[in-house]
Amino acid sequence: MTVVSREIAASADQVFAVLSDGWTYASWVVGASRIRHVDASFPAPGAEIHHSVGSWPMLVDDTTSVIACEPGRRLELRVRAWPFGEGFVGLTLHDEGDTTTVDMEEHTVNGPAKLLPKPAEAVALKARNREALRRLAYLAEGRSR
Figure 1 (cartoon, rainbow, N blue to C red):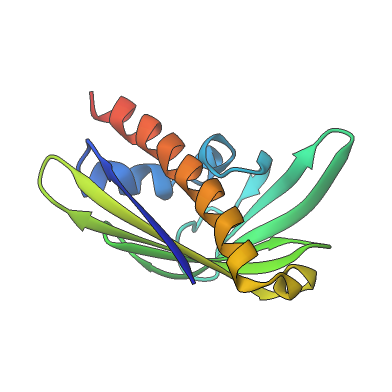
Figure 2: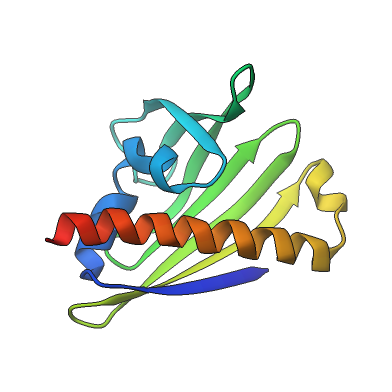
């Protein structure tokens, strides 16, 4: 499992407000290009975000579903981007008052991407998820002002 962390200058509630707004996912999730639908119950377990990955004209439509949610503390997702595969993403928020440290863990669980050697997967996921947390920080810090 690959884990990256970032300190965000916003409270855990402010960070979780971004995470719980499925319509923002294309703004901070690297690779997501558009959101087509968000279940009204998101981020409750079982709820889905219907998204597209890639760029026009090579878009792949798929879904991300909530595995578990502990508001203000943790969100676990099953991310899909077939034909590449499926992954697990866990976001853990450590409330430190005016700041929040977010740990983002990810690994492939199914599909052709699972054939990648673990060191190669880790390099790709670390770079991608560092950028994702940077974007998440911009959104959360912007809302906290």
